[in-house]
Image (cartoon, rainbow, N blue to C red; front, side, top):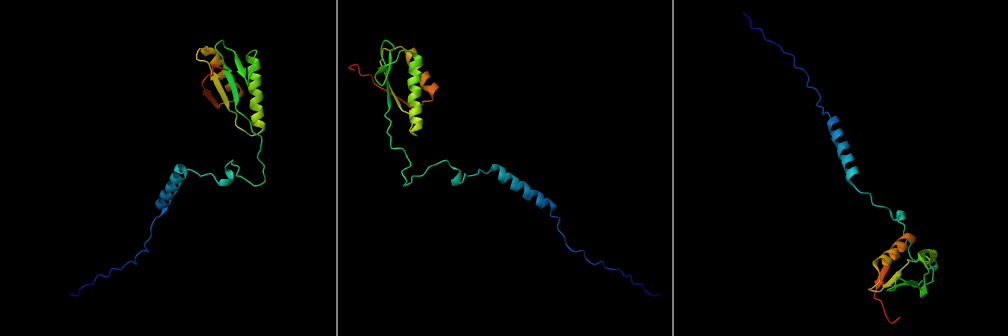
Length: 146
């Protein structure tokens, strides 16, 4: 008897391949994560800043601080002029604010209030300052000699 040999055909090996679709998904997720969590720095051209120049464009007008006094009896004087009522006070403060805006200066108000002045008059003065848009206020001592 003759032995039979079994012949198996060997299949050629498949070319190795890698499925990269999941890697692409992960890379896009990482990209989205870094885009969302990063902060964008503004470019220098986006900043609203004026650098000094030699053209002399800036205003040379000096605006003095506005001096406001509140006396014991509730009288308010602005730049040594007594104010008749709250509307006159607001008009004078608004005029000062417009003057500082026109010269590109920051308005500064120095308030001198007597210790015995009513708090409500001081609050009225602060409300008038806020109404016209002046938010730089300095409080100073009251000189009773003046």
